[in-house]
Length: 97
Image (cartoon, rainbow, N blue to C red):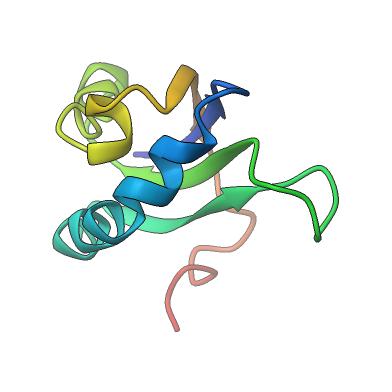
Protein backbone atom coordinates (compact mmCIF):
# COMPACT_ATOMS: atom_id res chain seq x y z
CA UNK A 1 0.00 0.00 0.00
CA UNK A 2 1.07 3.57 -0.57
CA UNK A 3 0.91 6.31 2.04
CA UNK A 4 1.50 10.05 1.94
CA UNK A 5 3.37 11.31 5.00
CA UNK A 6 3.08 15.03 5.57
CA UNK A 7 5.58 16.35 8.13
CA UNK A 8 5.30 19.76 9.78
CA UNK A 9 8.51 21.26 11.16
CA UNK A 10 8.90 23.19 14.39
CA UNK A 11 9.08 26.82 13.16
CA UNK A 12 12.06 27.56 15.42
CA UNK A 13 14.06 24.43 14.49
CA UNK A 14 15.62 25.54 11.19
CA UNK A 15 19.10 25.09 12.71
CA UNK A 16 18.29 21.40 13.19
CA UNK A 17 17.49 21.13 9.47
CA UNK A 18 20.81 22.76 8.55
CA UNK A 19 22.82 20.65 11.00
CA UNK A 20 21.31 17.28 10.00
CA UNK A 21 20.51 17.75 6.30
CA UNK A 22 23.34 15.53 5.02
CA UNK A 23 22.69 12.68 7.51
CA UNK A 24 18.98 12.94 6.68
CA UNK A 25 19.65 12.69 2.92
CA UNK A 26 21.98 9.71 3.47
CA UNK A 27 19.27 8.07 5.58
CA UNK A 28 16.68 8.66 2.81
CA UNK A 29 19.03 7.06 0.27
CA UNK A 30 19.19 3.94 2.42
CA UNK A 31 15.37 3.84 2.56
CA UNK A 32 14.73 4.39 -1.16
CA UNK A 33 13.10 0.96 -1.51
CA UNK A 34 10.40 2.12 0.94
CA UNK A 35 10.39 5.93 0.59
CA UNK A 36 9.42 6.26 -3.08
CA UNK A 37 9.49 10.07 -3.20
CA UNK A 38 10.47 12.71 -0.66
CA UNK A 39 11.01 16.43 -0.52
CA UNK A 40 10.63 19.56 1.53
CA UNK A 41 7.55 21.77 1.44
CA UNK A 42 7.61 25.57 1.32
CA UNK A 43 4.80 28.10 1.27
CA UNK A 44 6.62 29.84 -1.61
CA UNK A 45 9.57 28.53 -3.60
CA UNK A 46 12.01 31.01 -2.05
CA UNK A 47 10.88 30.41 1.55
CA UNK A 48 12.49 28.16 4.16
CA UNK A 49 10.99 24.68 4.37
CA UNK A 50 7.99 24.30 6.66
CA UNK A 51 7.91 20.51 6.47
CA UNK A 52 8.07 17.65 4.01
CA UNK A 53 6.00 15.27 1.94
CA UNK A 54 6.93 11.63 1.40
CA UNK A 55 5.32 8.83 -0.57
CA UNK A 56 5.96 5.58 1.30
CA UNK A 57 5.24 1.95 0.50
CA UNK A 58 4.22 -0.06 3.55
CA UNK A 59 1.97 -2.96 4.47
CA UNK A 60 -0.21 -0.85 6.76
CA UNK A 61 -0.45 2.49 8.56
CA UNK A 62 1.49 1.24 11.59
CA UNK A 63 4.44 0.24 9.40
CA UNK A 64 4.30 3.59 7.59
CA UNK A 65 4.45 5.34 10.97
CA UNK A 66 7.49 3.33 12.04
CA UNK A 67 9.56 4.04 8.89
CA UNK A 68 10.85 7.44 10.01
CA UNK A 69 11.59 6.51 13.66
CA UNK A 70 15.37 6.65 13.09
CA UNK A 71 15.41 9.54 10.60
CA UNK A 72 17.91 12.15 11.90
CA UNK A 73 15.36 14.94 11.40
CA UNK A 74 12.87 13.07 13.61
CA UNK A 75 15.47 12.03 16.20
CA UNK A 76 16.82 15.56 16.63
CA UNK A 77 13.45 17.29 16.95
CA UNK A 78 12.94 19.03 13.63
CA UNK A 79 9.49 17.57 13.12
CA UNK A 80 6.56 18.94 15.12
CA UNK A 81 4.03 16.47 13.72
CA UNK A 82 3.33 13.92 11.01
CA UNK A 83 0.12 13.05 9.21
CA UNK A 84 -0.24 9.65 7.52
CA UNK A 85 -2.79 9.28 4.73
CA UNK A 86 -3.56 6.30 2.55
CA UNK A 87 -2.75 7.22 -1.05
CA UNK A 88 -3.97 5.75 -4.34
CA UNK A 89 -2.23 6.29 -7.65
CA UNK A 90 -4.38 7.50 -10.53
CA UNK A 91 -2.31 5.27 -12.88
CA UNK A 92 -0.34 2.24 -11.71
CA UNK A 93 2.88 3.21 -13.56
CA UNK A 94 3.11 6.80 -12.25
CA UNK A 95 5.98 6.07 -9.82
CA UNK A 96 7.90 3.88 -12.28
CA UNK A 97 10.38 5.90 -14.30
